[in-house]
Length: 362
Image (cartoon, rainbow, N blue to C red):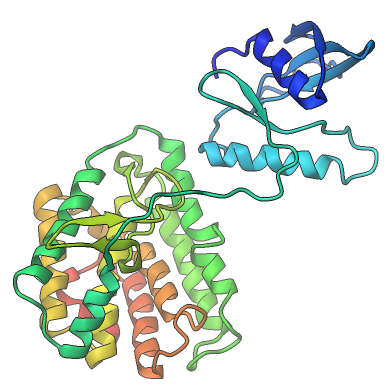
């Protein structure tokens, strides 16, 4: 928001108080505490309001939050903080009260969200069949359809190449996305914290080793901000719906508009390995053909060989997902052990060799 109009504030206050409000003043000056300007960084610029409701003069502070690299890069980050503050301020004794939380519309109007219990999302309904059904069919039959199945692999690789071509110059955001890869509740540390004490011979020491190795990888790749691009963020076969031939729609984009392209590549490619492991214990046959075709198509479009230098922790994250007994409780011990070997060996390599995946399984 560049400006907040007095009319918008007046209309908002009248909706909040359900009656007439006279806005007496609205200024950026009048802070409740004065200092010596030692604090050089602020997240937002407050507006100090004075208004009259039912002949009673009231004062309030309208606070906004600026975009910043301190975990406030995304609109959703800032919304999360404001919604949390509205509830949390009022549950702590001696804390200044929050009167409401609200949102600005693109028209400049303001609406209240203070009484909200939960948010929801309403999306359109799309017909189609989940891509995982294709992979289940190939797993069970051992045979891919030369036309459709291979064409779909190429279509998905080309789709990712096209969206990854959109770049953004935002070094702090790239660093944040690599940090989130480790610390986000849906990513490496969150996955590890939801593992049982022991599963198929894997216990806390192994998981600690994976986590600490990924921290080393963070320091290796976190400054490669020239790679920041448009991503899907959760590009797995359950989030891809196919109709006829190569006509598809994607679902449930996650964790931000911009990120590291290795995120999407790891998320989809590891599933060709995953389904092949379920069938034969290694990457072979038509799954290997599909896996190679996916990588070769993407690299021929992008020439992004640097991908092989940064993808290891993303493969580790997705390996932790598919090996998780929470998400996949019915895997055989052999399959789960192969995935754990894959994670460990990929993290130990200087760069990833997509042409010889089976050596990482040993």
